Image 1 (cartoon, helix red, strand yellow):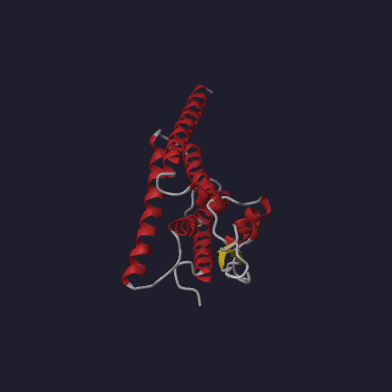
Image 2 (cartoon, rainbow, N blue to C red):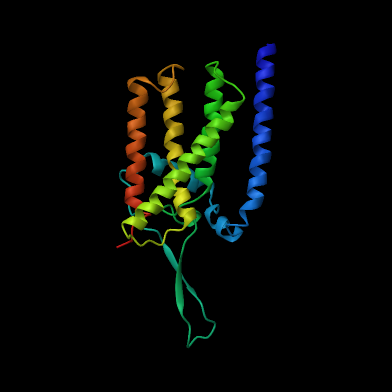
Length: 221
């Protein structure tokens, strides 16, 4: 009982410290990214979140894949009125990228990995920080690789940095599904074996199909 109590207090302390550090980082985001732009990506509803998670995991029969746009007037004069188009927010368009699901999936993946490490008796204070750092580095390298690839191939695109971050973060939904289902099927033995590899292969192909169909990094036809 004493060991479990110490372990629980350690986990709570680490989570609180992570939240404090995360809040401090959020306070500095406005230096680089306008808050108004972030609001668009967090404009979601509960039905949207549920449908988007299902879409990420089961994208095979979804149609259409194009993002919806709405015209807006850029001049008050009726004679010289000009129109521009803007993408609808996620709550109004299932194909629109959002930041809510990627951020929550990222945090959930870190907490889930820490919990599983504790259940296996492999928990130590550095697990959460190491998992968060590794996942963050993977996302950064992926985005840099995509930007470098589009530059080398001279592919012009209108995707913003936050779009790339959102699309890159959706893979954590599949990672979480792989961890949870594998743990259940393998009875706590980890993600190895045929069950773990089968689920990993499925979620990998589903995420790849999801990204290819949305084509966020290529010019739209």
